[in-house]
Length: 132
Image 1: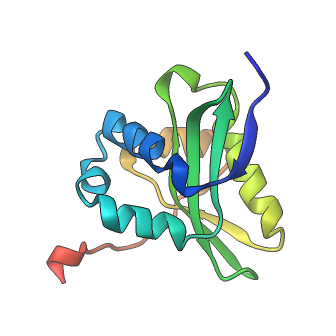
Image 2: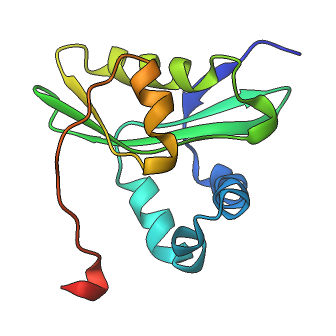
């Protein structure tokens, strides 16, 4: 396996991102393809992980650049998990904004992973656009 390359998301990466979303069961992102692409183009940082020319993971974040970096989407292809790719994506995102704290938006399915990485849980609320 070649080394993991972390680089900025490019619009040409979107189909591969959507394939990972679909495989993970993130159907809302797949079904709202136009809005999902818009979110990627307007997010910072927006990073992808590439191994042997294959997109195997991604991170989409939002930041104010000074205090907080929110990681909105973080996904690694199942066959590439447990190889440090997610950690490398997070590290690269934080290196772009080193003074920020990292807030990880996660599902209950990934709670154990983040706890094992030293993240503390925090409390929040959510409403979808359809619920507003």
